[in-house]
Image (spheres, rainbow, N blue to C red):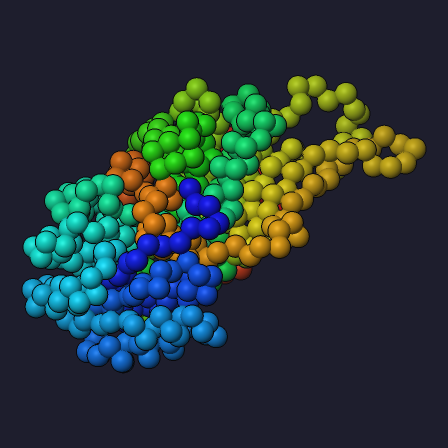
Length: 474
Ligand code: BG6
């Protein structure tokens, strides 16, 4: 993994989908930060490829417009940006790209930021034009299901070696997600209790306050299961439940992550009906690009298990949704009750379970909840919190996820990218849910914006006598 002095070697970053949303919202601002922080080589340049007709100067201007308060360093780098206009299916586009790359004489890193439907087309064209010796970064979604992910892997492997394929999940670029590794494997105090003997259950929540915004037509092809669970949630789950790696490097970490995912049993159709809930926020069908009778889920909750020595029998609850009460991503470990409570019931009325809450975002940090004696003549015990927050503890500001991952890709560190076997395991876990939903024509449940989703989500936990953690009130 990275040390703070890392710098990208000379690189031509070739961005397919250069006139698109992701490029202007995420990639160009990340390049601005990398330039400002001195992480780029003096010769670094970006080559944009897209269908929109533009020349180099037009693209350079667009690149400047995309970044608010651009740094002086970025303004300088942007003057070197190049642009190739053309269709992704046309050989001329790639001939023109080859000419530009020959002029630049820099090793390319290809970045696929296009709509996913043209990923395969671009990869095949890179192969036909002998450009498969570079590295390729590929955005999500990686396939639509198990079979299309397998096909995409096959297509990539026909051109690139697996070690040169960087499948992005921007959650892995988040500091707090990486911190799960530090918390678990740099401390002795958590590891002994990080298992079925002490953990009652785990909750992973990815809640968003926003709706689908202007991405309605994309979201119609995805839904919460594909958009968030198959990738972001599965990655957080793997980091939370994996065994200690031999070393914190690409192979060490990814081997253990994939083992954890492999231990998740495939759900039967009956499991799906008992342990999975989907719903849609009221108003979704009125969003731009959304079908008036859409059944696409904007919320889902489920219960699964990681069936291995460490976790057997521990429920893992997952929920994600748009238009919920707050933006909050968190992992909660709820610990078992003490074997015997030596207090009278009146003395522990305000005592809840021990909780460890990893706040991935916002208000990044960690909270430990435990019981303490309330000062006074009586013996009353209530829950209190011990808090660590990034903002208070560290003066350094965290790099944005894309800043981190772009540098990793240029340096050639695949640790925070998803390996082929991992992406397939994640699809294996969600595929039975996709299958069950396909055959289910029950109209989708609706939930009001501003809450925590449909009442049915509580049902999944009721079966085990558990309750969802409220990220706002703790
Ligand atoms: C993206 C999804 O991968 O993650 C979006 O496509 C979602 O629908 C976003 O809004 C959430 O990312 P973050 O970093 O805001 O949690």
